[in-house]
Length: 87
Image 1 (cartoon, helix red, strand yellow):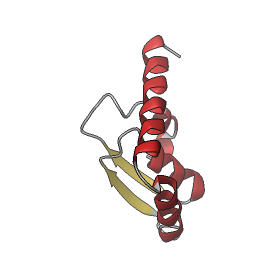
Image 2 (cartoon, helix red, strand yellow):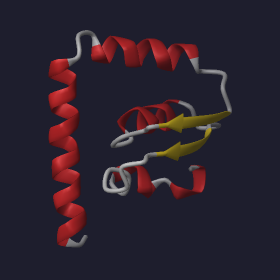
Image 3 (cartoon, helix red, strand yellow):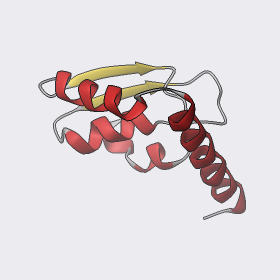
């Protein structure tokens, strides 16, 4: 792993951790979203940020084909890029 990717992943994790603390019931909302989208097989995640919600959706639904878009190009490459066959 290059130093740039490693640094990105560390920063993305810090951003996600901060967001979880800042937004009330952040994890509860994600759990509800996963339950609601359990039957979905095609999904577009516009403004996916670091991809943490997209990753949870992909992990919880093996049939899901996901298109993720993020205007801030520096956020996307991390762990979400490890699942290119389904994105």
